[in-house]
Length: 508
Image 1 (tube, rainbow, N blue to C red):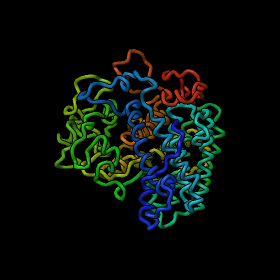
Image 2: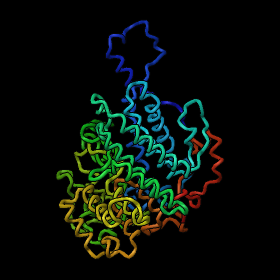
Image 3: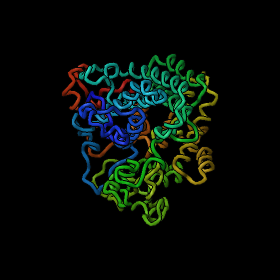
């Protein structure tokens, strides 16, 4: 891990440069100014979008939601699982990002910006739980200490999860006690200085982390206690809106300043189609699931019809938007599905000219499905709703997030369709129904979470890549060579088999 504190020297330089003291010849040029926590906080949130986008991409593939078009040579590292510790290094970027949040936590009070500490702890928990979900045991206790500890020990992954719940409790208390200064609300490019929404996000994140452990033996008592605390705290969870970074007041039509997903897979700042727009494709399995459930309105928001978006009519497909023109690609195939002959990732994520949408960190739909799963497994929880009511609200929120016209009525039609895994009453296995609808709701937005749910539940049963002879699928990532080569403590985790060494919540 790159254990150093990254100070935003350039930003600080310009801040100092706006004062008369800048030209003072008595200033030591070797003693550079430090960054104000508010600037570091904003930059850290922006950096998180790129880190989350990267992990969501691999998660979207390995959860069966996305695959690759055949306009590119097939990537064997991704689709034949032929990867090593030199591939998929999300570790360094996330730990560097965490250093920024830790800098804010360490310096917020001394800079009279203590309102930034709680939200920074929430984002710290968000990123650490992602690290656990990809790598298992990770440095936590000894991490983020800069040159004081360049080879931090790895903490037990379950212990890290429990510590994150405690961290979120601390963050909630701090956030409630320290309202944002009105002069610095623009530093918060997530909730614009709304402490109440940060607390709701913290509760939502606690819910996710706890529900991840729902199948682990012996955890019912712990989960019951901690889940009940979410309700007892009183602020509730995020509802009716999604948690997103940036948005119209932050992203602009300038190179390097667009929503990062739009910039990577859709268009550049001048509206030119990105080459990588031909790369990711919704899978045939995903489309088949939606079509079988007569869930075609969400289908048409998750993907464009074959050939992609009509640049002259943003948000509309080149081909007629009839179901037969929505062509998903079988996972991992090497031919027969070029970009023009298959569906692009759809308008729920990309519309030409909409470069300034917020980058989604968590959807309201996911939160409702977490509530549904928790209530279904532990009926005695003090939540006010039922598993059915949370399930149905999750579907409705999915339609809202995707931008389905007349979403509430369209969702009701699915919920009363009589279809297994769509209609609560018609579903013989309620947990599978929750898992199916959560998986659908995560499409295009939260790939890592979809992969986590897939590993946790072994559902839905997505097809294996034809380029793989065995039934093995990745259960985790290798520790990156950049870390194992510099930190001898990594060997304490033992030999890693990415097809057999499970994350603790993945029991089978």
